[in-house]
Structure formats: C-alpha cells, structure tokens
Image (cartoon, helix red, strand yellow):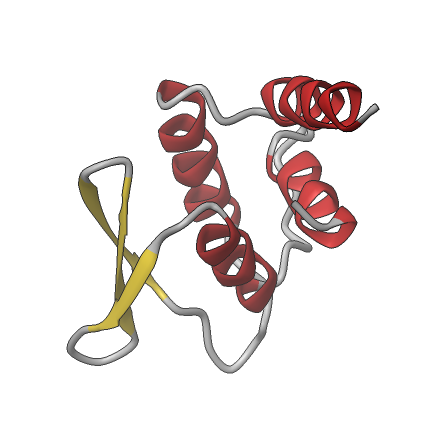
Length: 99
C-alpha cells in the first residue's frame, strides 16, 4: 500500500474526527484495498469491499468528506480489521519476508 493511502487511513482514524479528508483520497484508499466503486443516483457511490456494499454521498462542491461520513467509514474499516496498525503490521511482515 502506498504511503499516501496509509496517510489517508491515519486521517480517517484520527481523533477528533477530521473534516479535512478529501473524498478522492478515500476513494483511492478503497481501490487500494481492492474495492469496486459503482456510481449510483445523484452523488451517491456504492463501495463494494469485504463482501459488503456501503453507499456514500460524494461531497460537492467541497472536496472534503463530512465528519459523519468519515466516522462511518472508520467504523466500517475497523469492523473489518483495517486500521493503521493492522496495515503497518502487514507492511512490516511483507518487508521481513523480502529479506
């Protein structure tokens, strides 16, 4: 996973909830995790990941995701063991296997 995706994941898990996480960065993170993203009606997007479908509202005109959506995304990722710590562990394991 790229450093930019890890930064986005860290921002999603920041306390207090950040209102400065850009939606395009969240979409890029989802894709890096293997998600399929489908356009829905209006500004809605369906994110298919972990065998589940979550529907979010793509923010406009501001590129920043609202705090409620960030909190919802954090809960979803956390429920599926995708946290900054778990990604760091995976990255460390991959690097030690490369040695």
